[in-house]
Amino acid sequence: MSGEVELDRIEDAFHRTPRCAVHAEREARRVPCARCGSYACEECFGAASETLCVACRQRVGESLAWERDDGGGVFARLWATTVQMLPAPFTAFEGIRVGKGLWSAIQFAVIENVVSYAVPMLLCAPCTFFALSFAPADPDLPRGVLGAAMCGLLAAIPFVVAAFALLGALFTGLLYHLAASVAGGTGELVESLRAALFLQVLAPISAFTWMLGRIPILGIVVTLVGFAGTLVWQTFALAGHARGAHRIADSRGWLVAAVPALATLALVGALMVGVVALVVGMGLDLETPD
Ligand SMILES: [Zn+2]
Ligand SMILES: [Zn+2]
Image (cartoon, rainbow, N blue to C red; front, side, top):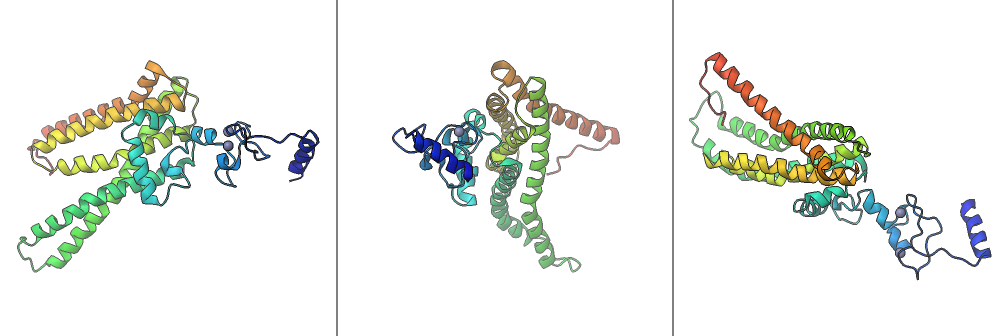
């Protein structure tokens, strides 16, 4: 406080009041932006507790609807972020920075997945119970118990999906950060992990393809197209992030962005070869688990 008083005294002595860098006609807050040092008016700071100017808030990632204080409740911000990021992966991810940190991104990934997969579960529930009513009566396993078990399973699936999404994001984020570091990226690990977590904005699409994937034959096509589409979208998003956060542009940026997708393809390929080898080795018939 004494520093501010001292500043006031000197500025008054010179009859000079700082002006907002954006709005030259307005008086600025005495203490400038904590990041870039430019003076800003109270409207530009947005809140009394805010220490960054508008431009810096955008640079550190709070251009993201999820992390905006005035963005409304959880579901409003979730929806706004989904609508904001899905159609424009490159530009949306170019703006993600440290923002509100890792925890905020983890929350986003979990809630986006739970909400997205709860919808198909709610749609599945009536069919499941309808099918259950045709199950032969078994005195050892009353329908009530069976129904409760199915109910618990349906309710658990969105949370299991969210847990796997976090593991996947950790895999993608670490790999992406490694590739970016090798390519001379300047961003922090937390930024790479946040980018990988915000890739989960695809969860509504994944849940929808997962639902369509239940359709016989057509489901296989939908699943493959969905898988390929996800990897392409992810590469666009990470290329934008590599440019914004790691300062890696052009072909090197695209190469870095493609590393997690290529690794996923290799992993899925190896897994499929492994499963086939195991099944052939055990002399069993290959049957789809569905
Ligand atoms: Zn600033
Ligand atoms: Zn201003």
